[in-house]
Length: 74
Image (tube, rainbow, N blue to C red; front, top):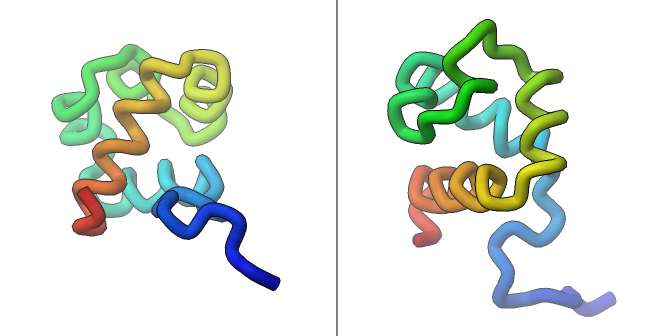
């Protein structure tokens, strides 16, 4: 089976995996500095952040871009 999106570094990576990676590497406080959104600043949790990011494309784009920079793909 061929990879359907060979040029997309996020292909096959779940949002929860991205978020958990960023929280493990930065922590909620530094993550809120990098991406200043309330779901990272005020009583942050994986569940509430996922809910917000799934509904808010501009915030998800910022999270995905930070992830790509963190793993050296951007």
